[in-house]
Length: 270
Image 1: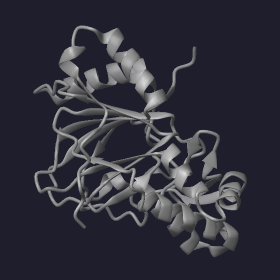
Image 2: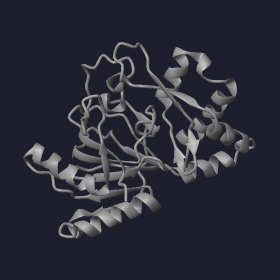
Image 3: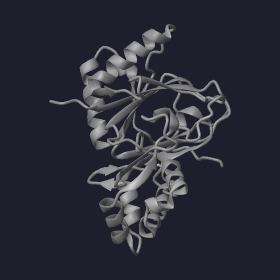
C-alpha cells in the first residue's frame, strides 16, 4: 500500500538547542503535553554506539523516569528486524511488516507515559514510514458516529484483553499471558490491533459481542483516519511521544539494516 507523506510535522532542529539543554527539555515536555509528540532533528550519532546510547539515556532521563522493557530490566531496546524470532506473539520491534497505529505497552498493567525513539539507521527501501495519530482526532470521528456515545461508554467502562508478546511475558512457562483494561480513559487511549485480536482468537469468552463491536468501530476510525500524520524518521532523528494521547505506527520495510533505539518513561515525580 502506497503511503502519502504529510507536509507538516512538529520538528525542532537539535543544533538550535545543542548548548541549551534546559530549554530543549522544556520544549520537549511542553510539546508532549500540548501536541503529543516532537521530533528533534539532527541529534548527534557518535561512532561509539555505547556512548550514543549513554547520551540518549541521559537526555531521556530529563524527560521522564526510564522503565525496563523485560524481566532483565533492559532500559534501551533495539527496534530491529529479527528474522530468527520464533515467538508466537511477536512485538513490533521484532519484525519488518506493518506496525498499525498502536499504544506502546498496551498489554501491561500500566502503559508508560512517554517513550523516545532514536534513528540510527533508516530503511533504505522506501518503507518504514512513521505514523502519528492524536487521541483528540480519534474521539472526534468516534463521536460523530450515530452510536458513538454508546461505543465510547463501552470502550471506557469495560475491560478489554490484550495478549502479552512472548518476549515480554513474566511467566515464560505459561502458553499465553493476558492483561486487561479499558481502551479509553480521560485523556488516555490503550490500543493495539494484533494483541487484542490474538487474545480473542485464543479465548472468545474474554469479550462480549458489544465490546467486540465497539472495538471494530474504533479500529475503523483509527486505521482510516484522515488526520493521521505520515513521515520519515531520518538518521539522527529523535522523537518523543506521549504514549497516553498519541498512537504511533510504521509501514512495512524490507531493509533489515533499519535500526532504532527505544526508551520508555513514566512522568517524573515532582
